[in-house]
Length: 289
Image (cartoon, rainbow, N blue to C red):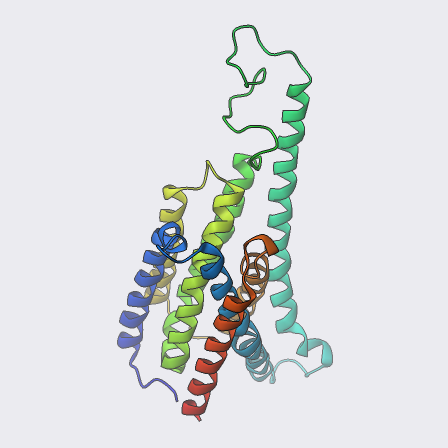
């Protein structure tokens, strides 16, 4: 069932969704620590929901985008098997770019750890407080807390998420015009997804990422909506390419953040989230037909 919305209605509706997602970004630490609900439950439930979204909604959407590219280029380029892979190459680029940033953050953190080990080999400065190393400004005990990557790596990583968030809301008006119920499910999936990507950034950058980082990410959502309101995406080819780029990034972030490690996961809650979202998506698909 396509949403019978005017351009103005879709822009206003996408603003409401953007503000909701921005609010979830700002409230992420509190949502993860809801009273009487362990974080393993919220993380695993969100992970199951997001995995169902990836396999049952995102991947088919990328495949549909490939058809849109074929139609858009049919008059200019002869269809070939290689061209059919184009949209998936864009998705692969999005996946690889975010994976590279994760590896860069890990390498920077290991560099900080190696530097701490090097300082540990030197004598403690005369008069330095007990437990502090010569030249060590940080309060974290060696081996008990993850070393923090450099400020440059943090800014690059944060910038990638700013683009990521902007793309989500830039395509939101078009999503509303093509399917209202699917947009609602997409919003639910992205809202819980943001709660857990917030956890990942907070763990990578415990001192640099904080209220300022969350405000920037929330502002990027509103900024993406503003760009869409002023320069609405009109090209099916452009939208398909942006969706594929975003899709590859979502794939990496879903499997990195939302399929939790054994120490903080619950398969029962994971299965509950997966089953609930799959059921809702099946119901929405049946209604759309």
